Length: 198
Ligand code: UDP
Image (tube, rainbow, N blue to C red):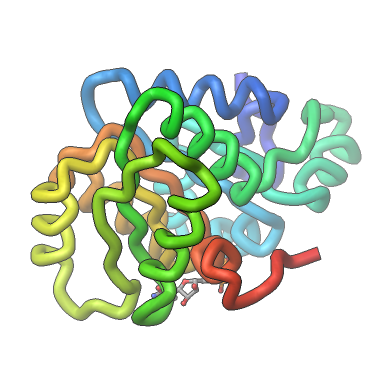
């Protein structure tokens, strides 16, 4: 059962449980997706029914930040802990490095995903980077095709909310990847372009 915070249903998991679920989804047939809403994204969903559907339709809905956790507690339905997207991504990359899965990095300004790939490869030996693409493309089809051709198992989709959530719903299955994770500005952090938000 998910915990409702202003219409968004959050999975009540510890970080360890969330990463295990993510790793399990990678092994399942079909395309799955994970979203990591913070309070601003919950607000976006309240105004945008398509965004709300995309978020609630995810296989995993993880509370990114203390705001959602505090909100759930105030509503009398506490969540176990915050599970920030960037930490979930780190845990998942650790698992993917162990199991030899490949990762595609999509999003951010030109050059950022490549820089992130270089740093992540050094940080997680064994992690295969299947490819990268910036997030300022005009047509979706060539990007979908590039991901499909790369054979990526997992895609980090970093286009900002709610663009990334809608993109995963619309294009995820055609990419051939088993898992997509919407991660906002995380590539900028992985690339060392910006510091993680406090
Ligand atoms: N972005 C993108 N394509 C777009 C709009 C945004 O790739 O059309 C990227 C942007 O460069 C940044 C990320 O999406 O890397 C959004 O970061 P932000 O911190 O605004 O998102 P949040 O983490 O708050 O969702």
